[in-house]
Image (cartoon, rainbow, N blue to C red; front, side, top):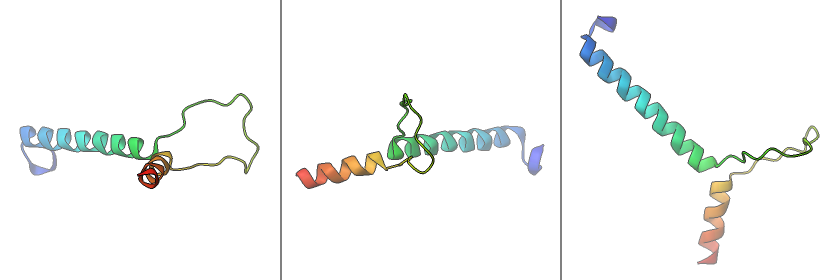
Length: 65
């Protein structure tokens, strides 16, 4: 028995933690919306800009309304 609990309870806790980890990763992925395109010419050091694309889109949508 790991951690002093029964195997079924341990497996349920493990499954719940893995599922919550996957759900959290999915939420973060949708919030930040990474740019997965590969540029032809890599940017020079210091030129790489990162933006919160999901937040930017939501702000633009709210300003339009």
